[in-house]
Length: 260
Figure 1: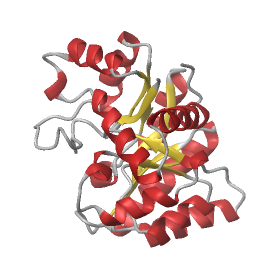
Figure 2: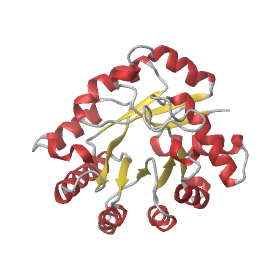
Figure 3: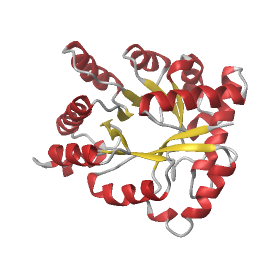
């Protein structure tokens, strides 16, 4: 059985002491590919070094919406140049909108659209973070697609309603579920997880955050635990674990152009 963790943050300090052991555990659990996301372009060199050390890792470059105030006049060119400089860059992001923790709406929208432009120019998918902003984010993506711009990608660590989930499926986006899908009281996420068509389903850990049941409560999540996300999805959708593994691995390879 092969799994792909489509969203990790292994460059964080919490992994520094034992990253080799963390890798051994993800290999033991069948994780054959990982997509390393990026919070801000300054992380690029560290993420690139990890990807060079571990060939199963592809990575992204971008600016997180909660860091939108760090945007500068040169950052778009910086992100574009970095993304074009390494063939292991498989996406732009994570980018998107987050109105739960910040209210700089116009700045976030500006930064998001600038990164959509980069992804379109380089024909790369976008990794989208969306919290309490689904309607606004949908409007922006609709505008882009109506202007014939190529925009594709994934709604990562998804927690939206069934209606919101369908919005992004209709726009051709993939939906990725994290450890939150294993939480007993996450009814809205469970409902959304049941309606995503198999061709658009992905799994992730978003490590080191959001450790899944039965690891919930641990201070650090890690890629090996994506197995628990897959198991929860299999149960929710009434299919086998092997089917979830095959489907999500195939989808991740298709979206991010991975070879496993």
